[in-house]
Image 1 (cartoon, rainbow, N blue to C red):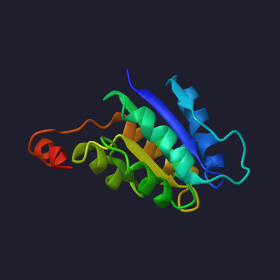
Image 2: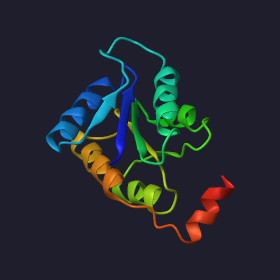
Image 3: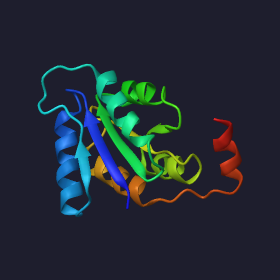
Length: 141
């Protein structure tokens, strides 16, 4: 069973709450690492919290949301064994898992509809890594 860790900054807070409701509806277990409201915060603090949890087990995955998704993505990818993917459509989301074995999805709350964001979360959580020729490439990271 995957352990899901979720976090955002102030710009991503509302979308994070929508995603949490979706995860609860799907009966998926997750841990919210903050923030608890939409007061201004620094996105790297929350990206690092999720990345530290995700890198402790192959079964852990993360969801990070900020205004563009880029800041969270950059910060999370500073961690060894973290492969955060900024997903902006269904194809990029599926490929992030199939080819890159991404273990964190980053989303831009200012760039996505709620409906699209939830479809990307669903695809990310349900798409398996293909392995094969992609495995040797992942090892080179």
